Length: 271
Image 1 (cartoon, helix red, strand yellow):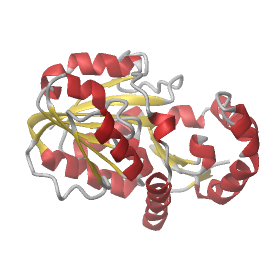
Image 2: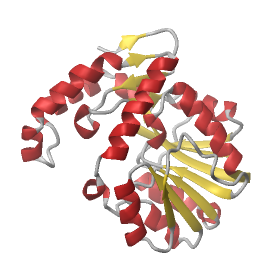
Image 3: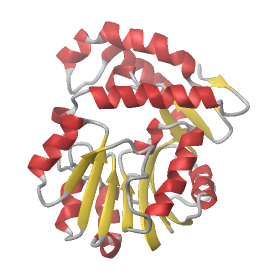
Image 4: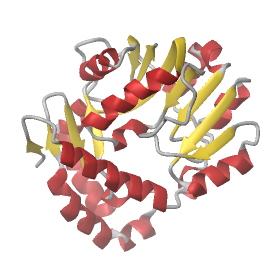
């Protein structure tokens, strides 16, 4: 059961980020993420915002370049950052037309203000942060963007996380692991339970977001889950003009809708 609290705690936010940063920076996930496969919503967004993506683009959490390759083919000047040196080294070999650096998205001070026509934060990368750091990073992203620049980001859906069916699914994944890696899942069963015991107690539910120890990397991380309307308010508070929210099929999620069927939602905002 996820603990209900009345307000975000700064120390808990800090420990969440430190835990996630350590996991991502130390792990070697290249083989797992070395793909060019796009989801339907990503295809739609790339097509819809092609003009903005044809200029200077900063990709936060580029991973193994799953999205970077497609962005660089549009013809813009794409720079990707990631915590993992192994990911960055792979991207430099695989996508020489783009540039890459090892970096922590919590510190964007090294990037020029007003330099980017688009910032892309895919695959729920901002969800490694707690609430206070997330809000600060959104403000920092705005500082880097040109007037009318576009931010494209995704985030886990709080309404999906709290539905009973999702909780049942998490217990099944805890027991069985990933169906795509049955032998590794069996071998890592004790690790999953150890991670769950360690991190499960750090879960909590706030009014508009939740911190969840989900199945990612054998339950070794904590992720931020936010409702659609709360994310719109966050973007507005950070100085953005909200444009739209889409589910994984590329369908519009209107204000007031929970999109409980969808584990993550994609957002577009302009500076």
